[in-house]
Image (cartoon, rainbow, N blue to C red):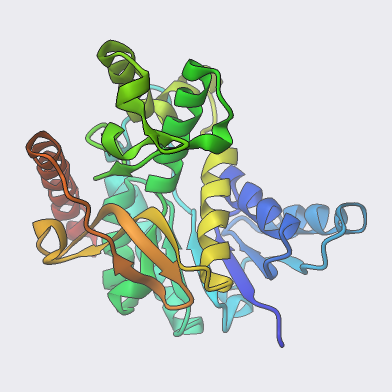
Length: 311
């Protein structure tokens, strides 16, 4: 069998960390793409030279030419301007819409059967741009967000309770931003709901910290943005797709009748397999959860309306 081919558009911190995680799991051959000549080539060679020590056989190459991404199984779009302290994800709509549009068109031209994973912010609007620009079937365009948000919720809960993070599961719905909807009822420690283990005020504090998780890191860094956790989340998606594991993971997927969304990409639980987003899982939400989710979807719709001006 031929090895899977995974192209990463954008060789910044997230792109490079993603390549490293993919190589460490030997998921396939990797192509790093960037507009800055020398950057993807240098980073690819540096990573490749670690292969004898780390013991992976994945090939890693860098390029400025989309032709080198031809026939990719998965194309990941991380290209775009990152947030800076004081910025929201929404502030990036104009510039990143143009970048994602071009990257998606090039991906579709050279890899018409690929699955697109979008990471660029503002995430939900950028997935919409990628779907329109690529003209791919909706199940082959997916956004990475919910896995990262859920991982942050899991991390904070495990530290608060002083338990192994392996026993903590969490679910976060909605847009990737301040309107995201962490669900304590569907977040557990070895099956026990967080709402039974933590008082309301502490649970609320964890939810708010989760919503501000990326901002917290950006403010600490002063320059640069998050990389390790987003890259790990992307890799989890790739592994489920390429190995057809059919894991249920929170991702930005296309919803029409599901949850009454009406034709937008938004964070929901999704079955990820070789065909991409194979099924959206509809959770039974309480009235207050439905209202929070509705508000989050409305925010996503407003971002999409802004982004569509640049199509």
